[in-house]
Image 1 (tube, rainbow, N blue to C red):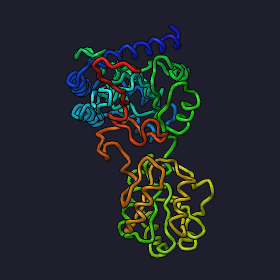
Image 2 (cartoon, helix red, strand yellow):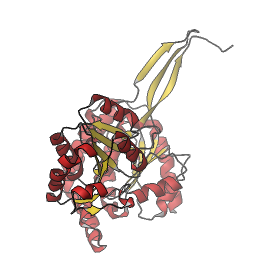
Image 3 (cartoon, rainbow, N blue to C red):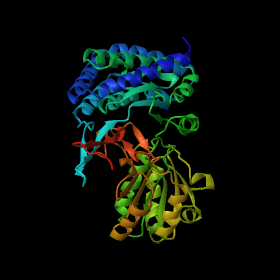
Image 4 (cartoon, rainbow, N blue to C red):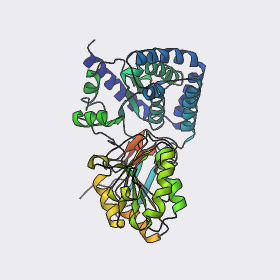
Length: 418
């Protein structure tokens, strides 16, 4: 069978499975998620054996240690995946939630009910634990999913999909609700992106190159974010001790993620009080500082920032620092170089915090808190499938509710339109 025919068949099967999922109650879905969690732990040895094949191949190909770390599944990771499924099972089910019922003058009762998106095509890189996370979220929200992981994780993804599908069958849910494309051929992604009759939404998760390829080649709507160029603006009315803790956490706690701070903006009036101790703390943690001319005047040992540093997503212990003359300049900088992902202000001034919240056009805007909180779990969603910065149909972390939409429902007693 050709790859094109195989993937088209998967699309048709996913569409049929999504229809079956519409009539499944929460108890059915939760039972499947709980069994999936148990099976992952029970078959831990098999998972690790298949994962070892991917790890051996990755080392032969010279993948970086960071990539290999993301690829690795061990007993701790597997148990974490199982716990994640149980947590999703415990979350409220958004499907079927009715909102805003109202009676029209002609007697019609009109409302909205929350429904699944349908079939989700999920394209991602490296981390095989994402296979389980995405599958669990899609199932709970009533969606079927076609998963296309990176070639480096093919063996891990296939064994995980097998375990998940067996749990679906044992609990009476359609097996084809969760499918992994079983090939490393790059042609597979292009074919999946063409299945507009069978797939409702594409969600890519990975590097900017992957996401741009998906966006440019998809005939299906794409929910995505290209990169996270996140800023913290330290205002002239900031508590400097608080600002130091927030900025350090935003940059250093986990620098290789999309919600890490990449540029720190500092008001000119507090720059000389704030920067020397803050930069020393960064440098002691191994952070390279790339500063504007004003920053270099205070911190002469810093590297000179180039224009390319302001829109850069470093994903590393590198930080761009710019001194701004006022809040207007900070807002203009964020507007020009930001990526609509995450921005924060540190200030004790209430009016400035309100202005920052109102004017910054990003999926999460924070006052006196680290950018690292742009995360579904941290924001109370329970879990997330990714972060969307394209605004349609969701903006920010996508949890269960964001994997649904609404349709109108209308109750009448014989009304006809005149």
